[in-house]
Length: 490
Image (tube, rainbow, N blue to C red; front, side, top):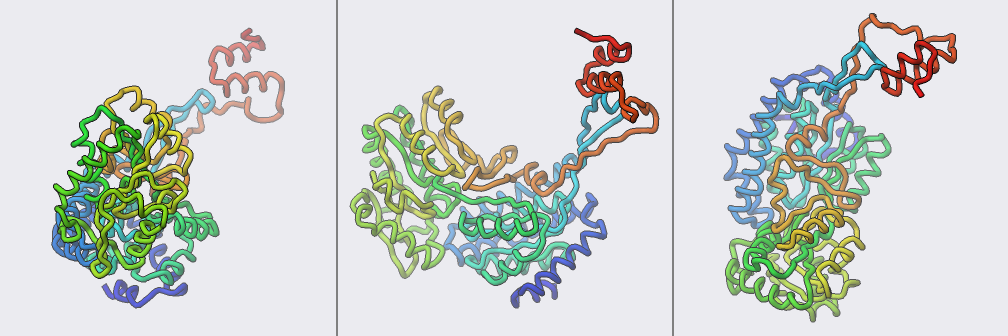
């Protein structure tokens, strides 16, 4: 616990270097490689989440005014599910994978052995500061690594709680939390890690990647982007709008990396969609959503100013068809819908990450695919349709980290699906077994005995040896037999 208290004071480059050395020394003992250590630490995370759910809810209320339901389900319950799966499957994940060998290495056997990378750094975001701090840590521990967690200073109550709980529940000789801001993060990034996992925005992602490149450290970057929602006609409009609202405003009031960023629909269908969204928003959050207890606030004044600036742009403010209200003193912005904001406006060219939802109209719903593909690849893409051909076309032509048909954000709850971006929305993926793999090295191992040593591989080289080696490498037993007798198979 004393070591944890030291990190709260602030970590400069020297302190960060000492910290990494301590963890490397701990890792070198081999303690993390055992199943017993890994499963004990995972169970400690489970117990931590169970014992302190109320404390987590209160920290999230302090940081984001996050509704209790969202905190319990999307932060605590999802973390517990992730951890329970790792505990249940860990032995299976740790078993080496047998691989077939070829005639070239006969007699032999081979396997792929997952081994821990070493000491990893996890830099987590402010929007889901409990789940997205510990979910990657679960994968890192399951894979047998030592871990340093750097929570976001933008969510200080949760950061402080994480430092306290990790200090109390986890093995601090191998798992640490470092609190702080830019200075502490910079000091940590100057060190050599065996992997860095960063969740956040692309600007900081580039800084992380540049720092990692100095040491040739691999990175797992979970970034974001403008996740589109394509809405076709001929659908159950009430269900569709409710699912869009749940993924946008029902997930931290739009402050979610996979939240719907904008909608694409046809000019003819747009009025019906807008009316349906208005009706359901009022049903969910009341006539004055700024008073609703079921909407998170904007995380801080900087992000509040950024979002109101998007709305205040001359060509944008006139496109608001619902909402647009804000309250600086409480950092609240009401759910806001915009219709056909200019495509070259700020709101259509940066990730919104808030309660604003522009709707763009197209002549044909298929035209929306070209608009999506003309931009950077998003972290998620959504389609609402009853048209089987359109579903297939969307999946085949739209490149995104993940795709959901007829819902939003729910793919994150499927443990068998990887969660990750593509190009500017991120690199690498985790969740479930993918988390274990993300923090493991797949070591190739070939076993041979001293029997079956073939003189054909050794000098002096002859044409006969060349023919035989070609046949062996080609994997053809028949060709090898012909080569032995100096014959051609053709």
